[in-house]
Length: 360
Image (cartoon, rainbow, N blue to C red; front, side):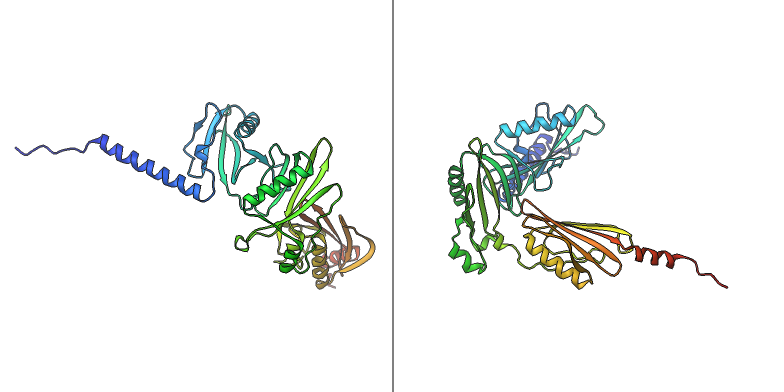
């Protein structure tokens, strides 16, 4: 009689698979730590959290009891209690998701209604890379931060001297060094170091050139109730001084250093608009549009012109259109609006061109 066949032991196979899974998870966690990304599977969760199958190495999705608005507030409190500080990006104050920072780690949290469960909400944790790290003062409020440029603004506790000490200490700990006027002029000949401001203090910092980060300007202004307004941005002298043209938008100029840009209407519309958000100082943006509009046969009109440090409004005319260029400034960005209208004479000519030709 042949000997019975031996079957592999299922428990041993399960142990091998479990060991492989643990090794894979450990390897993934190590890779996340080395990359500077937070390990989202280690983050705190709300009570009654039920993880879904959508979770991955850099993303965790779980559901909890309750509607989305209440879940949003609960997550805000949970992350704050665990040392995470909430911020919004410039011009994204109405975004529905949440952004947090803790040390060098960033976190993005979004919310949806659980599929087929109107009584439950889904919470999505995603690791968010911090490209331009700036220290957040403890207890800061009204935080506006762009982790990619950097830009940082907040209301901090304490006077300007205390906050200047904080940034001197914390920036030095993360690789920034003080930038003097002489050092700045060596690299940027037109650099103007202005460290005197009313009711506050200002300082400049730089990183090693190998880090590929531009120097920053830290401005601190004293507020009431022993608080300080903080503004950190790329030093103006390190921003582009001469914008180049990117691809046209329906025949209209667009600079190359933009956060976003778009148009409504097109070259055949009676009314059209163009807008852009540019990472450059207002005089540089104004010079770009003056140059590029002139190259497209737009003529600048003196009537109604407004040019101040905080506002620009100029009227232009072309053979068939009139346009108004407006520039504003918010945070470290220049906001561009160009509104065009076809002239009455051109509208009449277009109407005549559309009429059918009478054959006698």
